[in-house]
Amino acid sequence: MLMLNSRRTSPPRTRRALGAGLAGLLALTGVTALAGTADAATTLASAAAAKGRYFGTAVAAGHLGEAPYVSTLNTEFDSVTPENEMKWDAVEATRNSFNFSAADRIVSHAQSRGMKVRGHTLVWHSQLPSWVSGLGATDLRAAMNNHINQVMGHYKGKIHSWDVVNEAFQDGSSGARRSSPFQDKLGNGFIEEAFRTARAADPAAKLCYNDYNTDGINAKSNAVYNMVKDFKARGVPIDCVGFQSHFNSASPVPADYQANLQRFADLGVEVQITELDIEGSGTSQATSYGNVVKACLAVTRCTGITVWGITDKYSWRASGTPLLFDSNYNKKPAYTAVLSALGGSSGGGDGGGSGAACTATYAKAEEWSDRFNGRVTITAGSKAISTWSVTVTLTPPQKISTTWNGTPSWDSSGNVMTMKPNGNGNLAAGASTSFGFTVMKNGTSTPPVIGSCTAS
Ligand code: XIL
Image (cartoon, rainbow, N blue to C red; front, side):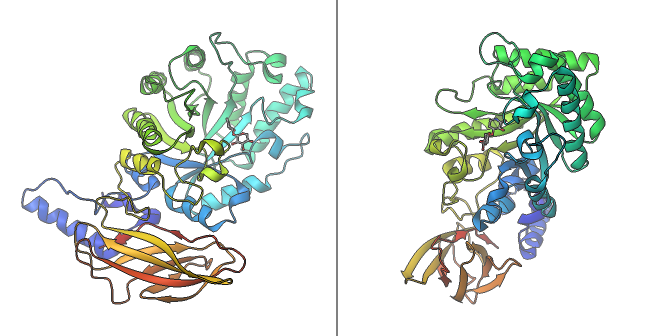
């Protein structure tokens, strides 16, 4: 249990020691259940890790300078997929001239934080430069294999799973291949060839076929299923199938989602949920998200879930508010549903963490043209606590000039303040205290992002 909270979410040592002692005591007294939330994971990544899964997000390199974006990424996720930066038009806009700079920024951020990286994507009809579509068959085959070799070679050993081929089947009832330069000029064999080239280019990477509208059992997923079955029978290298899982009211989470994942898993491949987003809001969105997570957890070979972005404001379908964090990085009911389906428990921060050891809520107080005061109220849950800790993340170039009723410490960026008590750590069950700070705007009035409250 205790390792669940490893990496970025470790509770304070005192709580860990207490948890271990308590567990021992309960074992001695024959009490089997360690109830409550003290040891429940409080982030998506740690909760998923406790279930042996990764929890990832699509990331855009252009947002890595935004403090709340990065802090939410670092706190909640342990796998990243570059949203556009590894696509053909991004890395090889001109034949055999490769530019990995934006993708490298994402990969190095992930590596420095111990996150895994999904590679997306090598062979796809979309976001494909026109020079590729203009090639004849012989040249196109050489260009495809060169692209796979160069891109996979550059990231060799750094990618846990690659979407080798993306969206090669048509929608609808035909189960036919989609028309694309690869399909039209190289024929059905292009997928097999891409996978064989990919296996040689980075033998450690898992090789996935990725598609949308294949989430339930239908003609399109049947066609993919038959291809995977054939590949497995003939020894064509394939390790995983990615289910994009872009849902909305016209295309809701299918009732047979889990059954579909399971039938692919039964072919001997991993299944991964690769681009999850569900348009909507409130309880219905939350319920759908929870159902997706439960389906993955029910399938042993479903190894991880990636949501297609962090905050609604940067979603490719922003108007559908399909993600887990709203435009201000507040956790939505969908977040709580995902965390809970993963067996975790909100430590607060969104004020919605019933059963949490403590919660933290933010309010803006006085404001002047150049600065504003913020106040964070800490409220103990159903048990007394003796200390608490909360992070406050600024948007640069904001700076905090002064604080009160807390003991601050700062991370190396100077953007994330961790606040601990200053004589106000002891709170009876349900009791509150608050700390305050002055934010120098330096041109931006964005409210700070308040992290989950942890307590012991
Ligand atoms: C989308 C990105 O999110 C957008 O920013 C971009 O403009 C278009 O592509 N299926 C995929 C993803 O495999 O690569 C797509 O990503 C969404 C649909």
